[in-house]
Length: 246
Image 1: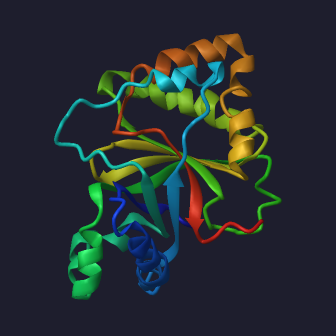
Image 2: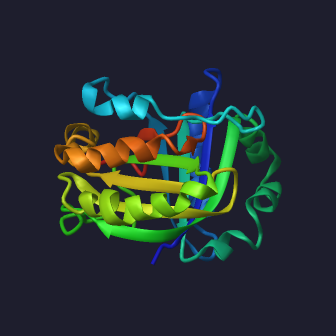
């Protein structure tokens, strides 16, 4: 099983962006996947969330005001492994130091780069899991939130995800999987990764499906205000590598 995750968020300049993306997709990711224990990789570009009443809760999320936290969020690169220690020998910074000079130069194009190594704490499968043919490969559309929570509220957060949000994703149309992640390294202590069959399915069913229960909607509204998100979180994104088949 893929229980370990190396996640990198970053932005790119306009100048040289296409050259970078060609390098990433044609050299860097295939190079990573030759590493022992690296099971899969997926690259995503963020898309704008729809503006509608069902997303007002997300627009009111609290974000960190710590200026030391890198602010990249336009692109997300995720790599999966059996466990987090796969990314420990060597650690990502040492792994990158061993790249050819031209590849190291490409990495310097990343703006506001932020990374976490995480482990899967819990997982549920959605209604589309049985029809999903790509196995461990991440879905065409994801939503990834990364955040911290004051320790005084972490017990309630644990209960909220376990008793409400994740069970609800089992029945949310368009959902393939939902995973709650815990950090091994990086700024965010927590993350939640939602996988959807398409952007359209996410926009139609996520949150709105949950909000049909007023009592639980109130719990969700209350809980999300206690979290402090990373810059740009939560990120809604569509997969650019591997390419999504029509």
